[in-house]
Image (cartoon, rainbow, N blue to C red; front, side, top):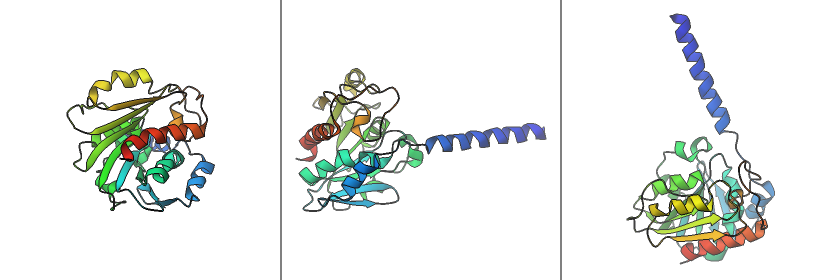
Length: 238
């Protein structure tokens, strides 16, 4: 009996350790791209215990986006792609640092992250891939005005939410394919804006290298960033 209990405990410990090790092996962000943002005089970057905050060095617009990374993707991998919208519109971006690098393990309320940018008075929530699925779940927070999805779609029904919604797909996305995003269109409000960027793949929403199962992007990183920013400006630039 005692041997059986000990064996059971050992198995549980090994499983927990295995999950922790697996969750902490992340797809690392491109260091050079992140440094480019850190050294950009037009963007002020602050790293807190639970988020990376980018604010304009000049006048802020009062609009902000809490952005949730994809599963096991380094939060810093999104700095470069999201920083241009800060420069162009004065929006504030708060990139979360999910618990165990997985958005579904992160049960902290949206207020945990919006508190890092107290001057913002109009909030969007969004995310990439599984981070976008989690963002959909947080979109019912009274503080949220809109939702932004990068290569993602909702599992919960937001058709009657009244939210402003922007969903960006990549034509070369091998994971959250344009077809999957179109199939989940019924979960979004009727006036949701769906944009497809030609040549963009799944990993191109950030800067973290090749992702298994994805296709190869056919447009360069700079163009990916510009087209993502153009789409974001339709909601964050208002």
